[in-house]
Length: 193
Image 1: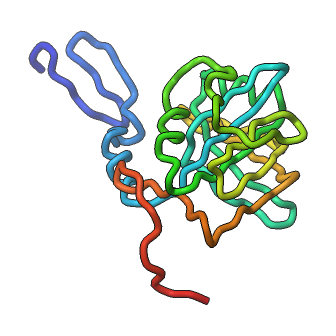
Image 2 (image 1 turned 120 degrees about the vertical axis):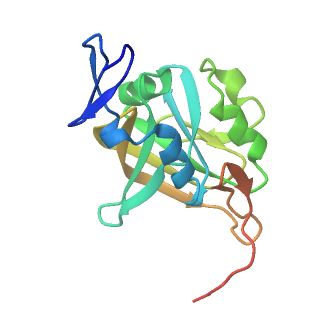
């Protein structure tokens, strides 16, 4: 084997210098998974929390309902960041489901920045009983208490017991969608009940 060549065997790469590294889950590149997952449209949420006097929020589209009885949802957030630590310490979080005109708000909370009131300037309509901000541009929100936390690769999975769920005027406000790396709004209805 020539210098710098790589040999693949049983999930391990090995250079001629003898260094070994595990392949990423069978060789699947993160960019490939990102491209495939871009084919799945999702809603867009901003997850908020408050611990002490520190408010923080992040944009998340890895969110889903888990159970109706008991009422459970889950959200995945990047591990190692300040937000995940604040949620763990607070024990609560709020899922704000964004309206289709709230692209700028989604972008604001997607940027890495310090927590604090500046992040929430001119965009809150109140707070949950635990103090998490409720966003004005949410079509609905869910006030959650952590039921469980699970590791999820480069993310943390928070399973939340829903304490309060509030739905806005859905006839007037439609949810923001994310598909193929871009924001979208709901178009025509293909099948209605």
